[in-house]
Length: 269
Image 1 (cartoon, one colour):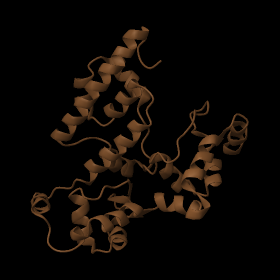
Image 2 (tube, rainbow, N blue to C red):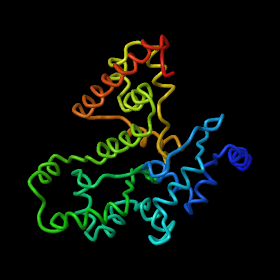
Image 3 (tube, rainbow, N blue to C red):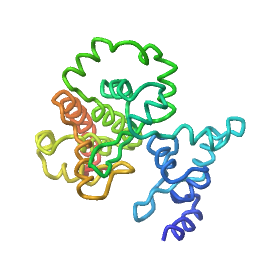
Image 4 (tube, rainbow, N blue to C red):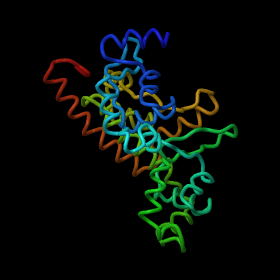
C-alpha cells in the first residue's frame, strides 16, 4: 500500500514519507523529527490523509541542509539526533546525571520528545545538537552550585519538563498551521476538557476544533497503559500555563470567527 501510494504521488511531484526519508538519507525516526522541527515541510496530504512531500521541498532541504562540503546527509542527521534519558543526556553534556536532571527540571534544557518505558515512566528525549550548544554557551551552569532560582524550584519539587516540552511542541505546530481555525485547534488541544468547554461553549465550534486537532506527536505510545501516561503530557496542568493557552485560544478564535463571518461559513474555508 505504501509503495503504491509513493508511486502514484511521484506522478504529481509528491512522494510519501518513506521515499522522502530515503532520498534525504534519513531513517523513519530521523525524518519524523525533521518534519516536527520544520526542517522538512509537508505538502498537500494524500486522499487518505497520509503526508506527502514535494520534490521541490526535498531539493530545497538537500541544498540548504545537506551540502557536500558540510558532510551531506550526515549534517542533517546530526541536527535531528536525539539522546534519551538523563544518563545519556548527561554524558552528551559532560556532567553528572543529577546535575543534568536539575538543569532539565528547572527549565534550562527543553525536551524535544518523549517515550514511555515498560515501567510506565516518561523518558525525555533531547536534541544532541542543543546539548552541545548549551555546554558551549553556558559553561558556568555545568559546574559549581545551583543558582538561587534553581534551588527554590528543587526545594518545591518542581519539574518544568512537561511544560517546557508542551510549549515547544505547540510552537512547532503553530508554525505549520495555515489558517485561524487550525491555529485555534492547536491551542484548544492543550486545554483540559473543562477549560475548553468554558472557553468554547458552543458545541458546533468545539466539533470544528476537534476535527482540526493535531494528532499525537511521533512516538506517542499505542499500548493503552503507556498511552494514558503520555496523554497527560499533552494537557496544560498548572493555572498559569492554562491561563496562557486559554488567552491565546480566545485571541485565535476571534480571528477564526471573523473569517467565518466574512465568508458566511462556519469553520475553515
